[in-house]
Amino acid sequence: MDKELYIIRHGETDLNKQGIVQGRGINSDLNDTGRMQAAAFYKAYKAVPFDKVYTSKLKRTHQTVKGFIDAGTPWEQLEGLDELAWGIWEGKPNDENAICAFKGLMEQWEAGDYDAHFEGGESPNDVVKREQQALDIIKAATNEKRVLVCMHGRAMRLFLCLLTNKPIAEMTAFPHQNTTLYKVELSGDQFVITEFNNTDHLK
Figure (cartoon, rainbow, N blue to C red):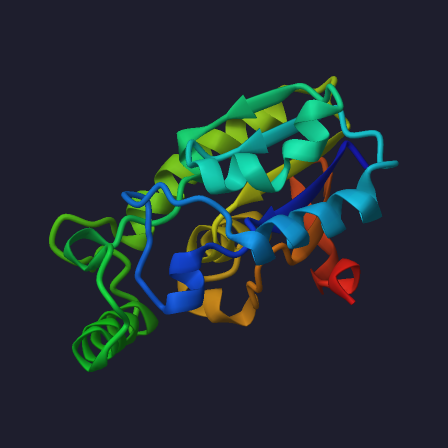
């Protein structure tokens, strides 16, 4: 094994709770539940000797891994780990209009149109392109054997497809509760998921 990645989604925000569309353009804070989730994750994994913490540029990821950063673990922000931009739907409630619009977009993705996107937003191909750049940075740091990566739900699903060479259409195979953990091992050029959707720290 050359490297081990602990990949988690950020904790809950009020917009998550209210069903408001976030995305890359909404820089929201964790709510009380999210802070408790972050504290529970830190308590469960604080003894793991992480060489580095990587987060997106959005503060909900920073806040989720604050315990590790405050404890002195080196930290780097990568825009490649940002959430997918939902364009004109960001900040809007998940009402009937949104549900209909999102259903249509998901159907395009499932049919293999990975360039489809909302006005002002990003496509899966756009996100995977910048995620590949982030992955190249992470892989290039050969001295970092065990890293913690905190990112976002949709982006995390796409990232796991990228790592495991799954078609983007299969992104829904990866559940993404707040602070869920996927542990992934890298050997050579092959990534293998060794822990899938682990939320034991929340029990």
